[in-house]
Length: 238
Image 1 (cartoon, one colour):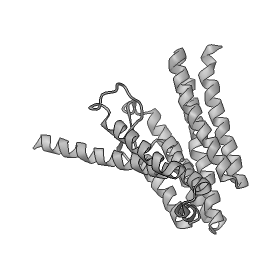
Image 2: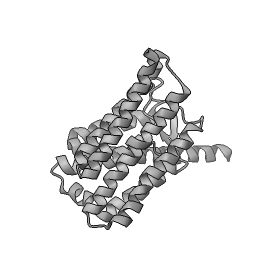
Image 3: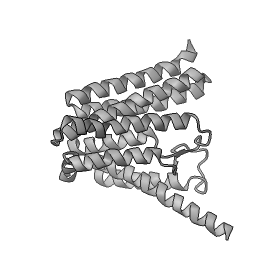
Image 4: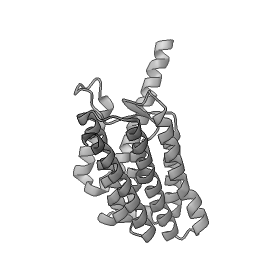
């Protein structure tokens, strides 16, 4: 019975994604965003439960990816489509642009499942990160007084470009750090500690409006450290 607990949590993740998709279709982007965030908590919890209970299985791995496609691919795609239609774009082009997110998410997860080098870091933006960027814009627009987020969320150009950008970031072959800490040393976790410090600072100043900024900081830090590593590698080869 215990071995089924992680898979049960994964199924709850999938249900959260399904609920988010329904809310987005109905036009409730905020509720959809909260369901996706609940899915993120469940996505972390199923892995934690599997490690704690030593209940690993091939079915659990596949089920986790299937749930992630729904919660972090289809549901954000539905939010994107709702945002595009609300901004005045016709159904067909809105569908084509929004469909990029679930398609890229599915491909990203398939690559992840067959890549043994992504245990401590990612190649490309992880699907929960992509989904959180969409969610952060919705929440910042709905629950803060910064009009810039209202303008961004209501712009078909911004929403369309965000969809394309997220698809590229999920599929790009660039190292992006994970948030898992193997130890607390600065030398082994420069990116993580820097990101944590910036996140705390931004949230202290801007509260909920900081969420899109925090995700932007994550991408910028990943890119900067990639460039620094390439320069070190090039210098070492000279």
